[in-house]
Amino acid sequence: MPEGHEGWDEYAPFYDWENARTLGRRDVPFWRNLAVHAGGPVLELGCGTGRIALPLGRAGVHVVGVDRSDAMLTRARARVKRGSMAGRIDLIRGDIRHLPFAAGGRRPSGSKGLRRRKPFRFPLVMAPYGVLQSLLRERDLKATLEAVHDVLEPGGTFGLELVADLPSWEEYRKRISLTGWRHRAGGAHVTLVETVRQDRTRHLTIFDQEFTERVGRRRQVRRFSLMFRTLSVPQMARRLEKAGFEVRALLGDYHGAAWDARAEVWVILATRPA
Image: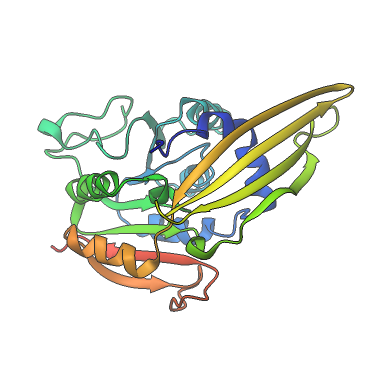
């Protein structure tokens, strides 16, 4: 069984380019609203290049972002520096299965702006856009939910999003999914050729990515795969309850509509009982 973090370092140069053409910023107001009303520092799991963290920081929220990919965090740190957000956004390279916040009340490495508490806890923990589905083994998901439960304040909110309808995602081979310029004038022209496979036995959806960059006559091809676990909303809700959370809402859009299996957005809001 491969690890779910594989491929994300290679994906880092293309992550913002692709997401700007697919998800865009549709989910940002939802997470920003939760964060602004949380009443304290917010923990984001899988913060990547800062797509969510930066808008939250601009709204005055103190964000602690954790990600395993150094390549992703390099881009996030550059954006934090450009935006003068060093006092509002702390970025930590770490494993979401073993969050570095609770042990002995120690201050997390790289988080100078956090006040010391024993243990350190957050009123809001976020896992946007399928982050938990990169945990390919049941034991990894279990460890992460336990870690989140430990660092979430009693009465605090754990918000997570699943990639909608991933269990029945259409398989296809060598399809040109996206094409366009990655930078403004003088930048690279990028084409994404994608293959999607379903491994029903291991409950995985696999995205084989082939990014071709062209700058003048130069051409570079990068190939890697991203894997996601195919969990439905009811399946994830049961795991949250087993980990000690109370499921508060199942949402089918970013405006609060109720979830059903045909919804384009799959969001779960849970709390740690007070």
